[in-house]
Each structure stands twice: as structure tokens, then as C-alpha cells.
Amino acid sequence: MFFAGPVANAINYATNQGIHILNASFAFDKYEPAHYQAISNYPGLFVAAAGNNGTNNDTTPRYPASYVLSNIISVGASTEANTRAIWTNGQASNYGKTSVHLFAPGDNILSTTKLIDLIAGPLYGRKSGTSMAAPQVTGVAALMLSKNPNLTPLQIRTYIVNNVDTASAFSNSISGGRLNAQRALAAVPAPSP
Image (cartoon, rainbow, N blue to C red):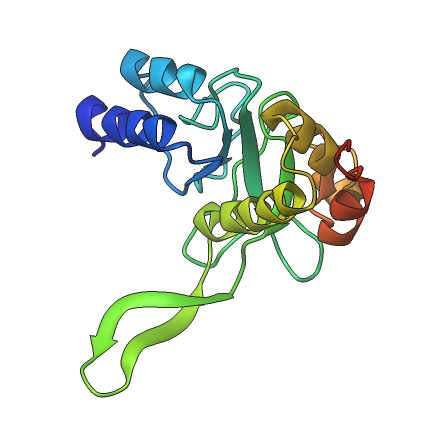
């Protein structure tokens, strides 16, 4: 369960520290005014996992991905086969023609785990979910900002959404496609002198 204070405080801290991109790999079903206010005040790009309920965020919102703000980009999970991710445990990536911007790889992704071996250090494992997909978009957004630090959150979102690989499996999203890092980065203009 997420409490308004800690989440809003973390977003406000990022605002005060000048952090340009936040990744929110969590989702919950309750609209929280303090979260909404903190995100709306945040001057950077807020990348949000769409959720893993297999539901339509247009009709059953998941937050913070479903807050309607120009600095949020909502991310669903795709598979290697270019389909919306559906897992054997009964979970599936959320979707939404007006609430989920795009899909990104989020199935069977190599990641660090909570386990640490005292000799070998952090352990790695395969994870799946929109919490694995959202960081893919966060990384591309960071590359875009490294190319042109003057981009606004809305410009970053627009370049990402307008340069996806479209496929019928993703027609249930705003962009109708999956993240294409190369195309999004190539679309970014050089900064003005």
C-alpha cells in the first residue's frame, strides 16, 4: 500500500533537487490528490508503469499512470513476439486507447533481485511486468536529454510516442506501438546554439 506522504514527498524531493526524469514502477487503484499535485508540480518527465491487472486503464484507472498530465508517459509491457504481455500467473499488462501511451519490453527482462550473495554481490534474475517496461522508456528519455538538454517533458513524450513501431497488438494504446529507442533518439534535434 502506498501512502500519500512518502510518495508525494519523494516526488517533491526530486523537484527540489532538479531531477529531470522519474520512473514510477508501481501502480495502485486509488486517486490520491497529494500525488497528483506533486506530479503536476514536477517539472520533469514522469514515466509510469501502467499496471499488471490486464485491465483497460481507460475504464479502470491505475495511478499514477492514469493521471492526465502533460509530463506523464504511461507504459504497458510487450513481449519479444511483439504482443501485449500476458503471463502464466494470470496477470497481464494493462492497456488503454486514451490512457496508455505505448508499450515497451517488459517480459523476461534481466534485472537485479532483492537477494544479495555476500561473496558474489547482487544477484540477477528474470522479471516481468510494466515495472520492467517503464525503465526502458526512462532510459530512452535520458538518452534524449543527453542529446538535447533543452527538451521539455512534453517534447520528450511526443518524440517517443510518435516514433514507435506500430503493430495491431498495440492498437489498444495512444501510439498504437512499441518503444523504438533508435527512432526516438534520431528524431531529437540538436540543441540550439
